[in-house]
Image (cartoon, rainbow, N blue to C red):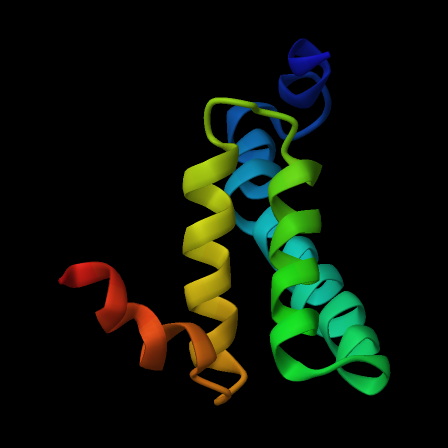
Length: 95
């Protein structure tokens, strides 16, 4: 599957653009744009951030990376959405 990324007209430059530029932009538009905003219309801010982060972590299909990705995305989306539920309450975990 990954060999097909490097085949084509643009070679390594095209592969770099697909993996390092296009993929993150598309993920951002889908998860933070469509999914998070859709959840925010129907659920509380906490539930929307939680579910969006869960879907983002599951999307990457890496069980070893899942916990860290899920927690990181929760904090990142929380901060980006200006809800600050996770970041405001994270002090409880530091004690």
